[in-house]
Image 1 (tube, rainbow, N blue to C red):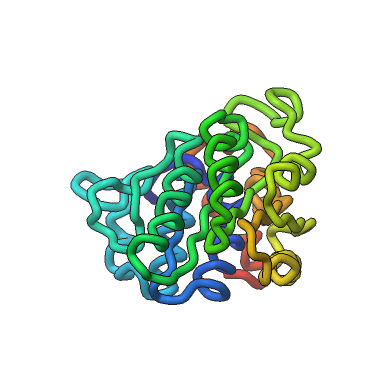
Image 2 (tube, rainbow, N blue to C red; image 1 turned 135 degrees about the vertical axis):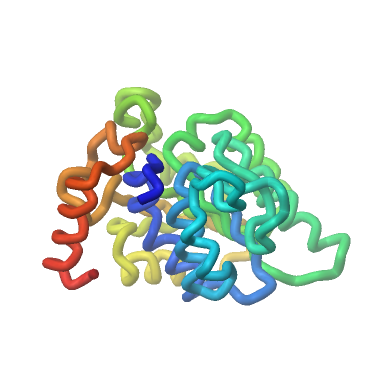
Amino acid sequence: MANAGHIGSSLSCLEILVDLCFGRMEKEDVLVLSKGHAAAALYTTLSLSGRLPETELSTFYKDGTVLSAHPPCSGAIRAIPFGTGSLGHGLGLACGIAFSCRFTGKSFKVFTVLSDGDCNEGSTWEAVLFASQQKLSALTVVVDLNGVQGIGYTKNILNLEPIVDKWTSFGFAVAVAEDGNDFGSLSQAHKAVNNSTVPRCIIARTVKGHGISYMENRVEWHYLPMKDEHYAQALSELADAGLD
């Protein structure tokens, strides 16, 4: 095992990333994972979708790897345009990429995945204003709203509700995936705003540590690495669920 943390954060957005990479993105489209601490989920999904060599996965979190704890800023991985993880930066970067289409003549879609913590940052809402003002119709934001942050529960740290009203009031077309860890729910939400001529936002209500009983909705699994017994139990639960 890599002995890396942020497992709970990776599991909350795994279905979101799989849905984007396999169901929404064309070869030229761009994905920005603003919640860069969920890099393990990103690397796995990029590999499975042919955007990252599978052989690289065994180097995750090791000395000299390009697969660091947060997505690298070295440009070593073509499918990762920026190093991310300092929350509040990803949406601004995604807006810049989407805005560039007007000057390059290129046509592609830009997707960015945000966290609860991203939505605490003022820079995120500055970017929201910019995207709305510029009518960045190529932009889709997915908020991985699992209700848990690094030091506690979102409702106690900085409550984001009513989050749908907030994004709507800023001029985004908004849809909710009530079960953001379910592909059908994600698909319905994307379909609801797919033809919008303004930026889109999918509020995906997810579960921290989804699929692993001892991780689900637990604050400590924002950071904790797995011990051998944790790993064995997780594999057993996945096998029982038919997901091994």
